[in-house]
Image 1 (cartoon, rainbow, N blue to C red):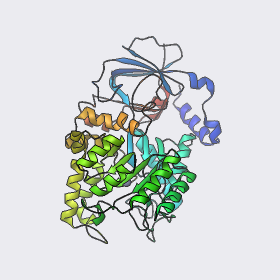
Image 2: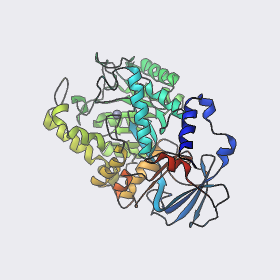
Image 3: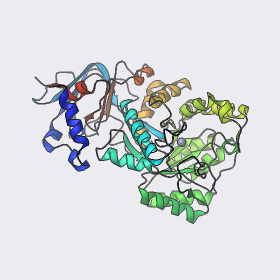
Image 4: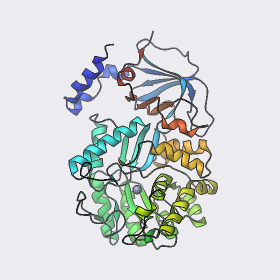
Length: 445
Ligand SMILES: [Zn+2]
């Protein structure tokens, strides 16, 4: 195939409306065959030997041992016989539209923020992250990017978006914008009725999840181990019950012990950060089938800039902040040893490298989580936490064809996840370094 052809087709696609981008039926049913040298079908279980995977209509239609399972004529063949194939990574805590290094060239305006968000989404996908949950964006940009990706206008991961962060007036995530930030309407939760209203407004706007903040930031005094929750119990219950009525799960930001346990008792699905969970929390996690998303990545980031993040209005001292980063970094291992269901997220966004999710896997290991369990958290654990465990996070017949390939065995060497050999989302191959070659594949004999 001429190297010009795929580029030409991309140019044509860019000029067409979204509806025209849906692949024609014939192309949809053309199967792709992946020859995998090693297969991680069920993360956490031992890696398997060579397998052949057939993908048709965006899903895995056949998985068989060996590399000679019979390739039907016309199939596109991806020879990954020297690589390991596993489910795409999932990141349960990103902020696609929050750029902590904001300046006039990034998100100083809505249009610039939208472009930065779209660009970051594409980089995430190329880093092997095929699904994300966005845990808060007060600008509304993430909904637009999610819908553009779903419509085929943009390349990026599947996005489950929480929209505006719901907190009390002046609470973490719902503070009034600074003069140089993109303005947004705060989703204030002050009393149960307003909490229900804020949840319902978010759902009306398009939220897939609901994000509430039950403690202050880890940087603030409200994030200390013994800090009182920043919401009252009836406010948390109001938000959770309105979300449940509309079949939306709730993610709760909580650092202090009292905030974590209040959120768990109120029925949230995930605890974000969860730095100071105690024995009561462990029992509540298990009883409520809730998941912990410890975000060691952001703790390391804050640790690297203690001088920048300490102090300020309601801030912590350098020593207190260092103690928080150390507790947060130890969180994954402490949770795993206690038997808390582990999910995985980073708190990453456009100011960070898109390999944050892969690094978080290594940080789990650094805190004492066995590597296969960390890989499980980043794939099937996250899929289960999203209640999408029958669609994503494993490689089984009928599952969506979200898969990645890396050189070595990532259940023995986490650094393998830093370099993708292949990324596929919903059966569509993603361009990595050499887009033309990747798009063409090799025809079956
Ligand atoms: Zn966050």
